[in-house]
Image 1 (tube, chains in turn purple, cyan):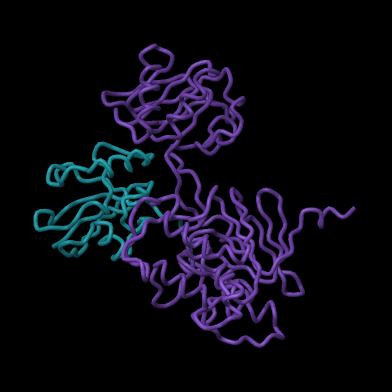
Image 2: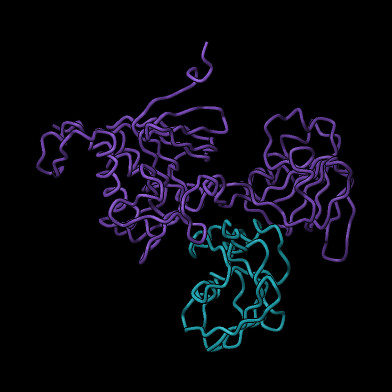
Length: 345
Length: 110
């Protein structure tokens, strides 16, 4: 049995990043008959539009005087739907390798393998990762006693737990883990929360009953040995407090990091991928970069720029996937062929 | 008008600022290192700065929205503000801020 082939998906295009530009790329590639798989580290499509500002109105999308990040995402998904894209969420692309025949092998941290003729990097500012408190030496505790998410609740059973933050993640996990933890302390910088009011009320009730300890302050330093946390210094308004803790869960939200993209041998310019402005191709033929992650003279980090880049990239990608086919430029308003692909004719 | 920005190495820079510009935009325009990943939408907190205590009373109070975002700053201090929420005006000519570690962009790959 050949292990290599077990989990391998063969496709025309792998799009890394499911933000607005990655989603529109499905559409432009689809009009040219290219099949796409989309991989994103978030648990849903939309990228920054979904994670950072789903409710914020955007005013510079052509044809939409005002549209929210979520509405734009929903529309783009609908627009891409006729082309049957396959989405893979909660995964990070870790490996990208070019084979001798010019095709690529893309691998994810979940162990999937994609064999593809074209790779489109539409990764925006990089992959969303938890904000890490700038506490010296925190790295050696990560994965052992400091965690940025709860994968298995049982890892926190009978532990002295310290949760930091004032959002829904911090509050939800305070409520969920309190019954199984040996002790639980919630640390937040102020006596106000940006979480669901019902969760806040429940948390306050637990604090009033003495079932959890709520401390106003922020993390100062960690004490422990071999990655095993023992206590945490908390800076409070009037000094310092030492809290005994064997597990720490900081919840400060997400930020973007370039991540593995930096290791794929592409020419970079200040952490952005250099491309040409004809095809938006990187220094490796067959790998394209569109949207906020690319760099070229005059680049503007606007969603609309990414849409334009997607359209031109698709023309070039088509020539790689179907080198013998003549590409006829067509309009969706007049081409019956395109309209059939869109399911409207 | 001017602002004074202390970078991550403790070096102070005197930057020409324009009325109506966000402090974040001034810092970014002069190419000092600031992440500002959401581009000024008060949605990411990666333009976090520490405001010189003498200047703090001259700023308008942080909105609820800004306070909410400051909750996601791991190195928050009493003088923490988001520089995208400070608009330059005559009264702020000479403003002094220090770039926060949590708003430092990743260093360029070697």
